[in-house]
Length: 100
Image 1 (cartoon, helix red, strand yellow):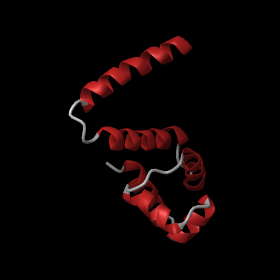
Image 2: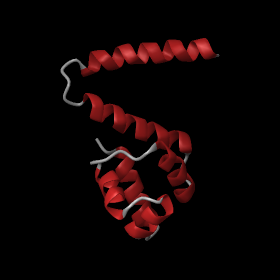
Image 3: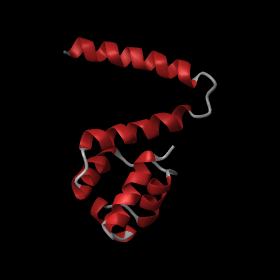
C-alpha cells in the first residue's frame, strides 16, 4: 500500500514539478522525497500539511491516506492484523464519542 506517496507523485507530475523543486519546498533531500513517493519511507506529519497546501488537496483526506499507509506498514505482516485493527477501531470510536 502506498496511496499517500502515489498521490503526491501524481500531483507533482501533473503540475510538471521536478522532484528537486518539491523537496526544496519541503526542506528535505530529493532522495527522501523519492522514497516517500515510492512508499519506502513515511513523510513527517508536518509535511502532509505543506503538501496539502502546495497541491491544493483536502488536508483531512491527505492525512487519512498518510495514516492509512503508516498503519499498513505497521501491521502488514502480522497474523492478527485484522483483529488488532478491529480492536483499535472500537477504541478510537469510543474515544471520539467521549470527546463530543
